[in-house]
Image (cartoon, rainbow, N blue to C red; front, side):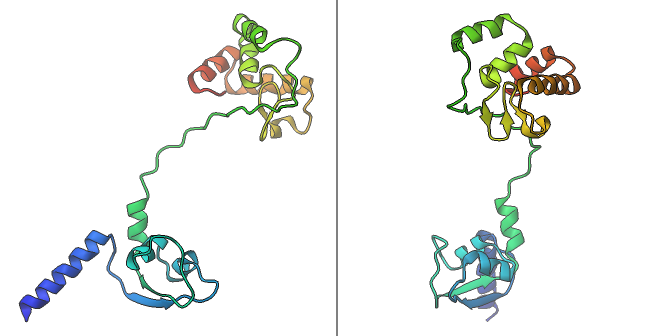
Length: 189
């Protein structure tokens, strides 16, 4: 009898470790109209994956009247298993999508690129951010220097864009040269 109990207990422990579950009570839940795996997982404080694993479900689809085993105490174990260690977040570079109606100017993009490469760091950044256009938008980024719309306080005029860009670069980088170097290293400024 002891040998049978030891064998069953060893199998149970192995199942717990292989399945990633922590010890807990099993509850049988009958699915009612409007129930979802997410709702059931919240109600019993378990993860959706633990319900799916306990019931051999391949998708989140459940049916009214279906009986589901819910193992309590599985949420923390599943979250630790599924969550990779957090890394320090780095700012994401802006991806410019150019407004089709924005006119760059009569100059070709090739002419603008040549001027930007020969000109000032400010012109270089303007070319790489918007191809020199004051009217280009990319979500919340506006104009020639792709400034956050909040910085412009509703005034999208070229004069205000120039003023705000100069202040932004001065405060953040100290100079347009430093801003260009940062842009070249990171793909944004």
